[in-house]
Amino acid sequence: MTRTALITGGVSGIGAATAKLLKASGYNVVANFFGNDADADAFHGETGIPVRGWDVSNFDATQKAVAAVEKDFGAVDILVNNAGITQDCTLHKMSYAQWHSVIDVDLTGCFNMCRAVINGMRDRRFGRIVNVSSINALSGQFGQTNYAAAKAGVIGFTKSLAQESASRGITVNAIAPGYTDTGMVRAVPAKVLEGITAAVPVGRLAEPEEIARGVLFLVEDHAAFITGATLSINGGKYMA
Ligand code: CAA
Image 1 (cartoon, rainbow, N blue to C red):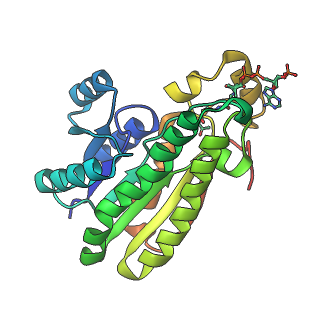
Image 2 (cartoon, rainbow, N blue to C red):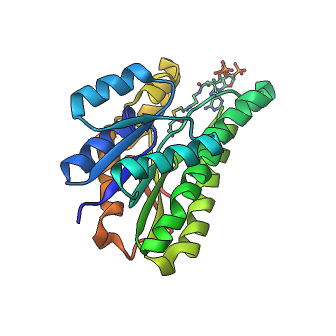
Protein backbone atom coordinates (compact mmCIF):
# COMPACT_ATOMS: atom_id res chain seq x y z
CA MET A 1 0.00 0.00 0.00
CA THR A 2 1.38 3.39 -1.00
CA ARG A 3 1.26 5.92 1.82
CA THR A 4 0.52 9.57 1.17
CA ALA A 5 2.74 12.21 2.78
CA LEU A 6 2.00 15.91 3.14
CA ILE A 7 4.98 18.16 3.85
CA THR A 8 4.54 21.78 4.83
CA GLY A 9 7.14 24.24 3.66
CA GLY A 10 7.90 21.47 1.21
CA VAL A 11 9.35 23.28 -1.79
CA SER A 12 12.65 24.53 -0.38
CA GLY A 13 15.31 23.65 2.17
CA ILE A 14 14.71 20.72 4.52
CA GLY A 15 11.10 20.36 3.31
CA ALA A 16 12.10 19.99 -0.34
CA ALA A 17 14.83 17.49 0.51
CA THR A 18 12.29 15.51 2.54
CA ALA A 19 9.69 15.60 -0.23
CA LYS A 20 12.22 14.33 -2.78
CA LEU A 21 13.56 11.59 -0.51
CA LEU A 22 10.07 10.36 0.38
CA LYS A 23 9.07 10.32 -3.27
CA ALA A 24 12.24 8.40 -4.18
CA SER A 25 11.37 5.95 -1.38
CA GLY A 26 7.98 5.16 -2.92
CA TYR A 27 5.60 7.49 -1.08
CA ASN A 28 2.93 9.67 -2.69
CA VAL A 29 4.01 13.18 -1.77
CA VAL A 30 2.24 16.55 -1.72
CA ALA A 31 4.18 19.70 -0.83
CA ASN A 32 2.67 22.80 0.75
CA PHE A 33 4.18 26.24 0.24
CA PHE A 34 3.27 29.84 1.04
CA GLY A 35 4.64 33.10 -0.30
CA ASN A 36 7.37 31.51 -2.44
CA ASP A 37 5.42 30.82 -5.64
CA ALA A 38 8.51 30.89 -7.89
CA ASP A 39 10.23 28.23 -5.74
CA ALA A 40 7.03 26.16 -5.84
CA ASP A 41 6.82 26.32 -9.65
CA ALA A 42 10.49 25.40 -10.02
CA PHE A 43 10.18 22.57 -7.50
CA HIS A 44 7.12 21.14 -9.22
CA GLY A 45 8.81 21.42 -12.61
CA GLU A 46 11.92 19.66 -11.35
CA THR A 47 10.28 16.87 -9.31
CA GLY A 48 6.71 16.46 -10.60
CA ILE A 49 5.58 16.56 -6.95
CA PRO A 50 2.20 18.32 -6.63
CA VAL A 51 2.33 21.61 -4.73
CA ARG A 52 -0.45 23.43 -2.89
CA GLY A 53 -0.25 26.96 -1.51
CA TRP A 54 -1.79 28.07 1.78
CA ASP A 55 -0.79 29.75 5.03
CA VAL A 56 -0.46 27.12 7.78
CA SER A 57 -0.91 29.81 10.42
CA ASN A 58 -4.49 30.37 9.19
CA PHE A 59 -6.75 27.80 10.86
CA ASP A 60 -9.70 27.93 8.45
CA ALA A 61 -7.55 28.04 5.32
CA THR A 62 -5.60 25.04 6.59
CA GLN A 63 -8.67 22.91 7.32
CA LYS A 64 -10.06 23.64 3.84
CA ALA A 65 -6.75 23.09 2.05
CA VAL A 66 -6.06 19.77 3.77
CA ALA A 67 -9.57 18.56 2.94
CA ALA A 68 -8.91 19.47 -0.72
CA VAL A 69 -5.54 17.66 -0.66
CA GLU A 70 -7.24 14.53 0.73
CA LYS A 71 -9.95 14.71 -1.92
CA ASP A 72 -7.40 15.01 -4.73
CA PHE A 73 -4.58 12.76 -3.51
CA GLY A 74 -6.08 10.47 -0.86
CA ALA A 75 -5.99 10.43 2.92
CA VAL A 76 -2.89 11.87 4.53
CA ASP A 77 -1.03 9.03 6.28
CA ILE A 78 2.12 11.01 6.96
CA LEU A 79 2.35 14.66 7.99
CA VAL A 80 5.66 16.49 8.19
CA ASN A 81 5.26 19.88 9.85
CA ASN A 82 8.29 21.62 8.45
CA ALA A 83 7.00 25.13 7.63
CA GLY A 84 8.78 27.70 9.73
CA ILE A 85 10.07 31.25 9.78
CA THR A 86 12.55 33.27 11.80
CA GLN A 87 12.41 36.91 12.90
CA ASP A 88 15.68 37.08 14.79
CA CYS A 89 15.97 40.01 17.17
CA THR A 90 17.05 40.47 20.77
CA LEU A 91 14.08 40.66 23.12
CA HIS A 92 14.71 44.24 24.18
CA LYS A 93 14.12 45.32 20.56
CA MET A 94 11.53 42.72 19.51
CA SER A 95 8.12 43.92 18.35
CA TYR A 96 4.86 42.15 19.15
CA ALA A 97 4.56 41.37 15.42
CA GLN A 98 8.01 39.71 15.36
CA TRP A 99 7.06 37.62 18.37
CA HIS A 100 3.64 36.63 17.08
CA SER A 101 4.46 35.88 13.46
CA VAL A 102 6.99 33.25 14.56
CA ILE A 103 4.67 31.71 17.16
CA ASP A 104 1.79 31.72 14.64
CA VAL A 105 3.66 29.94 11.85
CA ASP A 106 6.07 27.71 13.77
CA LEU A 107 3.83 26.58 16.64
CA THR A 108 0.19 27.35 15.80
CA GLY A 109 0.83 26.11 12.24
CA CYS A 110 1.74 22.76 13.75
CA PHE A 111 -1.54 22.69 15.71
CA ASN A 112 -3.57 23.76 12.66
CA MET A 113 -2.08 21.00 10.50
CA CYS A 114 -2.33 18.25 13.10
CA ARG A 115 -5.91 19.24 13.88
CA ALA A 116 -6.76 18.87 10.18
CA VAL A 117 -5.45 15.30 9.86
CA ILE A 118 -5.72 13.75 13.31
CA ASN A 119 -9.31 12.51 13.16
CA GLY A 120 -8.76 10.77 9.83
CA MET A 121 -5.63 9.11 11.17
CA ARG A 122 -7.49 8.03 14.31
CA ASP A 123 -10.31 6.53 12.24
CA ARG A 124 -7.87 4.66 10.02
CA ARG A 125 -5.73 3.55 12.97
CA PHE A 126 -2.53 4.71 11.28
CA GLY A 127 -0.52 7.88 11.16
CA ARG A 128 3.00 9.26 11.20
CA ILE A 129 3.54 12.86 12.27
CA VAL A 130 6.99 14.44 12.32
CA ASN A 131 7.30 17.97 13.65
CA VAL A 132 10.43 19.86 12.73
CA SER A 133 11.77 21.59 15.84
CA SER A 134 15.32 22.93 16.16
CA ILE A 135 18.58 22.61 18.04
CA ASN A 136 17.75 26.08 19.37
CA ALA A 137 14.64 24.76 21.12
CA LEU A 138 17.02 22.71 23.26
CA SER A 139 19.96 25.07 23.65
CA GLY A 140 18.33 28.52 23.35
CA GLN A 141 19.93 31.05 21.01
CA PHE A 142 20.91 34.69 21.28
CA GLY A 143 18.32 36.66 19.26
CA GLN A 144 15.74 33.87 19.11
CA THR A 145 13.41 34.12 22.11
CA ASN A 146 10.46 33.86 19.70
CA TYR A 147 11.83 30.99 17.61
CA ALA A 148 13.23 29.00 20.53
CA ALA A 149 9.92 29.35 22.39
CA ALA A 150 7.92 28.20 19.35
CA LYS A 151 10.24 25.28 18.61
CA ALA A 152 10.39 24.22 22.28
CA GLY A 153 6.59 24.41 22.25
CA VAL A 154 6.61 22.03 19.31
CA ILE A 155 8.48 19.46 21.42
CA GLY A 156 5.94 19.64 24.27
CA PHE A 157 3.12 19.48 21.73
CA THR A 158 4.74 16.41 20.14
CA LYS A 159 5.06 14.53 23.42
CA SER A 160 1.45 15.30 24.38
CA LEU A 161 -0.05 14.33 21.03
CA ALA A 162 2.11 11.19 21.03
CA GLN A 163 0.48 10.13 24.30
CA GLU A 164 -3.01 10.86 22.99
CA SER A 165 -2.40 8.99 19.72
CA ALA A 166 -0.37 5.91 20.66
CA SER A 167 -3.38 3.65 21.07
CA ARG A 168 -4.57 4.55 17.56
CA GLY A 169 -1.47 3.49 15.64
CA ILE A 170 -0.25 7.05 15.22
CA THR A 171 3.29 8.03 16.11
CA VAL A 172 4.26 11.65 16.73
CA ASN A 173 7.91 12.61 16.84
CA ALA A 174 10.07 15.71 16.57
CA ILE A 175 13.32 16.28 14.73
CA ALA A 176 15.71 18.88 16.06
CA PRO A 177 18.00 19.86 13.17
CA GLY A 178 21.16 21.77 13.77
CA TYR A 179 22.34 24.54 11.47
CA THR A 180 21.56 23.31 7.96
CA ASP A 181 22.57 24.68 4.59
CA THR A 182 19.24 26.37 3.71
CA GLY A 183 18.07 29.87 2.85
CA MET A 184 17.02 30.41 6.48
CA VAL A 185 20.50 29.75 7.81
CA ARG A 186 22.23 31.57 4.96
CA ALA A 187 20.28 34.67 6.07
CA VAL A 188 22.22 34.74 9.36
CA PRO A 189 24.90 37.46 9.24
CA ALA A 190 28.09 35.90 7.81
CA LYS A 191 30.27 36.75 10.82
CA VAL A 192 27.72 35.24 13.23
CA LEU A 193 27.34 32.10 11.10
CA GLU A 194 31.11 31.67 10.94
CA GLY A 195 31.23 31.53 14.73
CA ILE A 196 28.32 29.11 14.89
CA THR A 197 29.83 26.77 12.28
CA ALA A 198 33.17 26.80 14.07
CA ALA A 199 31.37 25.45 17.16
CA VAL A 200 29.96 22.40 15.33
CA PRO A 201 32.16 19.38 16.17
CA VAL A 202 31.54 17.88 12.72
CA GLY A 203 32.88 21.19 11.38
CA ARG A 204 30.21 22.20 8.87
CA LEU A 205 26.52 22.87 8.28
CA ALA A 206 24.19 19.92 7.73
CA GLU A 207 23.01 19.14 4.23
CA PRO A 208 19.17 19.22 4.00
CA GLU A 209 19.23 15.56 2.88
CA GLU A 210 20.89 14.60 6.16
CA ILE A 211 17.83 15.91 8.02
CA ALA A 212 15.44 14.32 5.52
CA ARG A 213 17.02 10.91 6.28
CA GLY A 214 15.83 11.28 9.86
CA VAL A 215 12.30 12.07 8.74
CA LEU A 216 12.25 9.03 6.46
CA PHE A 217 13.38 6.82 9.34
CA LEU A 218 10.54 8.05 11.55
CA VAL A 219 7.72 7.78 9.00
CA GLU A 220 8.30 4.18 7.93
CA ASP A 221 5.68 1.60 8.93
CA HIS A 222 8.46 -0.20 10.84
CA ALA A 223 8.99 2.82 13.12
CA ALA A 224 5.77 2.00 15.00
CA PHE A 225 7.44 1.84 18.44
CA ILE A 226 9.15 5.22 18.21
CA THR A 227 6.85 7.93 19.51
CA GLY A 228 7.22 11.08 21.56
CA ALA A 229 10.92 11.19 20.69
CA THR A 230 13.03 14.15 19.65
CA LEU A 231 15.75 13.16 17.21
CA SER A 232 18.70 15.57 17.23
CA ILE A 233 20.66 15.82 13.97
CA ASN A 234 23.13 18.58 14.71
CA GLY A 235 26.70 17.47 14.05
CA GLY A 236 27.30 17.27 17.81
CA LYS A 237 26.77 20.99 18.46
CA TYR A 238 24.32 20.36 21.29
CA MET A 239 24.10 17.01 23.06
CA ALA A 240 20.89 16.93 25.07
N1 CAA B 1 26.19 35.67 22.60
C1 CAA B 1 26.49 36.74 23.37
N2 CAA B 1 26.55 37.98 22.92
C2 CAA B 1 26.32 38.19 21.63
C3 CAA B 1 26.01 37.12 20.75
C4 CAA B 1 25.96 35.84 21.28
N3 CAA B 1 25.67 34.77 20.54
N4 CAA B 1 25.81 37.63 19.55
C5 CAA B 1 26.00 38.97 19.64
N5 CAA B 1 26.32 39.29 20.90
C6 CAA B 1 26.58 40.62 21.43
C7 CAA B 1 27.37 41.46 20.45
O1 CAA B 1 28.74 41.21 20.61
C8 CAA B 1 26.96 42.87 20.84
O2 CAA B 1 27.64 43.22 22.02
P1 CAA B 1 27.89 44.77 22.37
O3 CAA B 1 26.54 45.41 22.52
O4 CAA B 1 28.66 44.71 23.65
O5 CAA B 1 28.68 45.32 21.21
C9 CAA B 1 25.50 42.72 21.25
O6 CAA B 1 25.34 41.31 21.59
C10 CAA B 1 24.57 43.05 20.10
O7 CAA B 1 24.84 42.15 19.06
P2 CAA B 1 24.48 42.48 17.61
O8 CAA B 1 25.16 43.71 17.14
O9 CAA B 1 24.64 41.23 16.80
O10 CAA B 1 22.93 42.81 17.72
P3 CAA B 1 22.01 42.98 16.53
O11 CAA B 1 20.75 43.52 17.11
O12 CAA B 1 22.64 43.70 15.39
O13 CAA B 1 21.78 41.46 16.02
C11 CAA B 1 20.85 39.30 15.97
C12 CAA B 1 21.22 40.52 16.85
C13 CAA B 1 19.91 39.71 14.88
C14 CAA B 1 20.18 38.31 16.88
C15 CAA B 1 22.13 38.71 15.34
O14 CAA B 1 23.08 38.49 16.36
C16 CAA B 1 21.82 37.39 14.67
O15 CAA B 1 21.27 37.33 13.57
N6 CAA B 1 22.19 36.26 15.30
C17 CAA B 1 21.95 34.92 14.73
C18 CAA B 1 20.80 34.27 15.41
C19 CAA B 1 20.71 32.84 14.90
O16 CAA B 1 21.54 31.99 15.16
N7 CAA B 1 19.65 32.54 14.16
C20 CAA B 1 19.49 31.24 13.59
C21 CAA B 1 18.67 31.35 12.33
S1 CAA B 1 18.59 29.82 11.45
C22 CAA B 1 17.56 28.90 12.38
O17 CAA B 1 16.95 29.33 13.30
C23 CAA B 1 17.40 27.46 11.95
C24 CAA B 1 17.63 26.57 13.08
O18 CAA B 1 16.70 25.97 13.55
C25 CAA B 1 19.01 26.37 13.56
